[in-house]
Amino acid sequence: MEPTTKKNIVIFASGSGSNAQRLLEHFEHHPAIRVAALFSNNPKAYALKRAETFHVPALLFSRDEFYNSDKVLEQVKSFNPDLIVLAGFLWLVPQNLLHAFPDKIINIHPALLPKYGGKGMHGINVHTAVLQAGEAQSGITIHRVNEEYDKGEFILQEFCPVHPEDTPEELAARVLQLEHKYLPEIVEKLLLEKK
Image (tube, rainbow, N blue to C red; front, side, top):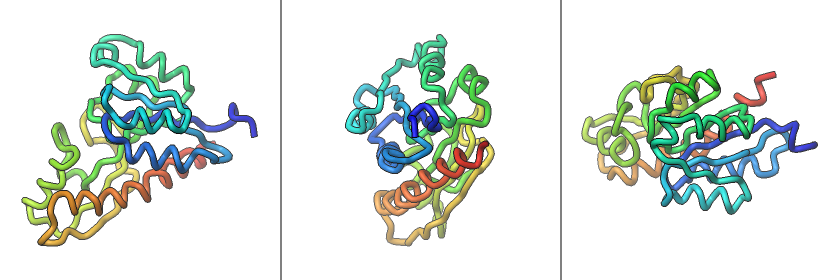
C-alpha cells in the first residue's frame, strides 16, 4: 500500500513522550495508519528524540509561534492530519488549530475527568491530588479537545484501583499502563471508523 493512502497522525508532546513512543511503535508498520510528525514546545522533550528514532519529522515551536501566528497551523496542515493526538502536551490548543481540525484533536488525561482536570493538573500533580482526596480508584480519560483544559467530550474512560499505601509514583505507573494500552487502540478505532 502506498504511504499516501495512509491516515496521518500528528502528535503533540511536551515531555518524555512515553505515549508518543507507544503510538510510534504501534503504527510503525501499520497498513492503514502512520505517525506523520511530532510537534513539541519543549526543546528538551525526549519525545523529539523518540520521533527521530522512528524517522518521523520532529518539529519544535515557540509559545509566540503557537499563539500569535499561523506558523504551527500551516506546518501541521502540511502533514494532512486525520487525527491530532495530545500525548502529554501541556499548553491549551489555540483557536486557529481547533477551527482547522474540528473533532480531530484528542487528549489523554491521567485521571477520571471531570475530577482532577484543568490548568496545572498534569503529571505527578494529578496523582498526588487523587491520593490526597482518598479516592478508591483512578484511571484515564481520552477526550476530544476544545477551548478549555480537559473539558471536551469523553471518548473513553478506563479505571484502576488506588491502594491506600500508594505513592504518587506507584499510582502514576498503574495509570500509565492504562494509557499505553488504550491510547493506540482508540486512535486506531477513531481513524478506521471514519470513512
